[in-house]
Image (cartoon, rainbow, N blue to C red):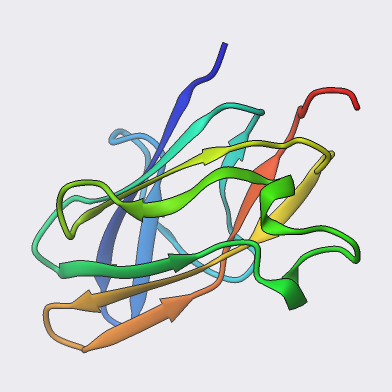
Length: 132
């Protein structure tokens, strides 16, 4: 059964911070951060939690030079992340068709309240996609 995985976002200069549960400690979002561990059909939500971030500018997934050879964005995402009614929330749906046990490095760009635009490139992992 698909789940919804939320990535909560805040900004503490100079770092974009994230967590998956409001009771967790904030973590610095880095290239090696696995911000969501998903299975096929899961919805991933990126949600800003305070005014330290004015808006999410974009989230780019399935970036060619970050994918294993031969994979395309549709192997990971059935719906690319897009704005979900407001500038502070994006939603995407994991497909995981053939993307087995790997991570998709994505780029997230936010506009912060005080420091302008910030881009980070963490991962979303597909941990248990369906068999081919």
